[in-house]
Amino acid sequence: MAWVVLIVAGLFEVAWAICLKYTQGFTRLGPTLGFAVFMVASVSLLGVALKFLPLGTAYTVWTGIGAVGTVVLG
Image (cartoon, rainbow, N blue to C red; front, side, top):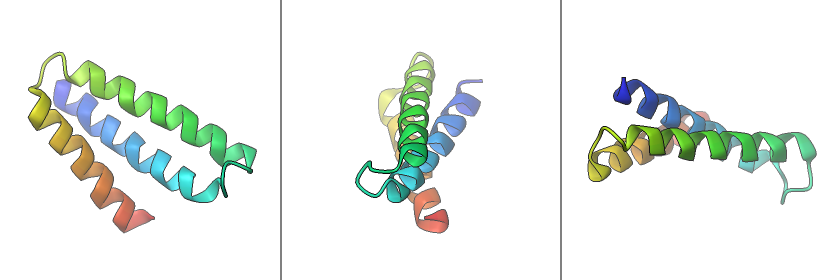
């Protein structure tokens, strides 16, 4: 279950990174709200996953999903 939570956290990381691109310096409300919601969700779910997974492993997977997803989709 911790791995599923970690993968979802990684997907939320991709979402906030893409929203950040469209905020135009935080001047557009919709993408800015999306950025904030997805960022809080991503970090919160990472924290949940860290209760069951080692920090180094979880952080590496989380940032890896975020990096690859952002390159592919962003």
